[in-house]
Length: 332
Image (cartoon, rainbow, N blue to C red; front, side, top):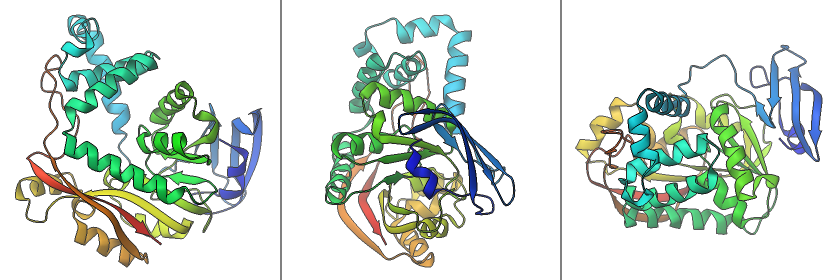
């Protein structure tokens, strides 16, 4: 993480001031350190350049850890399946299997081949309308941010697709965040491979209990991040506390009369952020003023499952064909 973050951060438990002990630096980065709260004495490590500000609660479910661990463990136990996945021409695999092959290649550190596999998989997993709407939202956010400066905090970055776009197209410091240190370690290697890491910092924390001081974040972005945070509770109030200016949330909403997908949405606990009216109500209740910008609609289908990894899926939703409404929620 970059040195400039020290002035933005506080204890996520009690909001106390942090005392820093850095033992390894590289340029303007802290590679290894410990931050200790002078009030409650909670400690937070910085390892491999990643600041880890996770608190003991609330509970959280690291899906990245589960998917990667289960896939690699399965292939170790089934070497024949591994050969069918990894030792055949990439284009002969089904799109879902191409995606899983990319995950394995990432784990092996072969990012060039992983990128080729991921890019090819994307064209088979998502229909053109879905990809066009996604790209339109990325372009809108980049254009909106092109006339300002200062750090951008990206919430729930996951595998960093929006962070990658921002870093490639804007000359601004970017803070990629997730509650999974594992996925952030992967992101560091990925951004290093792409030559983008110099402008990116990595922080692990739970968005429901962030380590930022009041109003410390001028600009925040997220790509479907609200959908990836379990039991959001007062999430939007916490974000309102730390964001001084603008929160740009790339979102997609299901039709309110989409009964087939609504059942699954309720089952996985994502009702509030999956529909436009309830999302806007939650923003308003947390004190945000929201503009719905760059609206785009496009068909979406259940993502295909694996053939080599028979039945293995990628996205939980949708479970039936639907039309998604894409937009950027510009919240102030």
